[in-house]
Image (tube, rainbow, N blue to C red):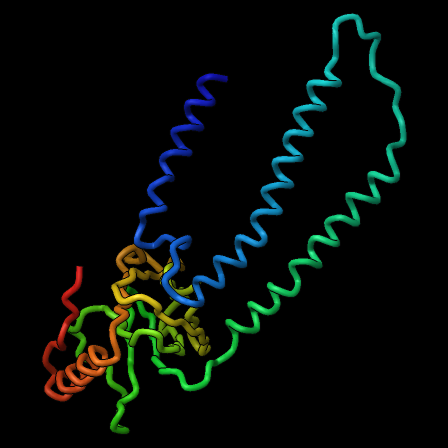
Length: 252
């Protein structure tokens, strides 16, 4: 028992680093990630309370009705308690009904395409991501030269609509602090949206195993002021025309 407790404690405390991780989903910095975290907590707390109640009930039953010295044999066998059986059938139905409204509402909200949003085309391929932005002057999409860093830049407090596609195998676009995962599938256009509420750089990665280089299929999302974003996009457009490395973000 002592060895099991020590080993369990080691595993428990080894996970504490997730709260300071750059990919901590419990420290959202965008509206979508915040809504997803709140929905998760709404369902987690009742589930946690039920789990604790069931485990304590099980331990009590094992202790209270354990076989004692001198017991003649099995206790009397009874059919059960109809009232309890009805209760633990109806109670989960009521609990699930409570989850319906926020869950469906969240699915509808995250599945919509926001109006007046900046549309960015995101392409996944083994083992990198590429991003294409609309040209404010009406020219071809601005994607930057292949030598540019794997960064997606977005303006602060601006709704961003992402069009996701893959050109080889399934990938999954994930920026934990800004939004949850959405798959990029060959032959199919998926979409998602996000919004950055804090200036900074936020790590993202492919969350679908896609081959031997899956671990290096990482990127960062740079949330910056509208003025900085406009300057960066202008530099990207100029670099694309001259086929030179674009202006890179100099962050931490």
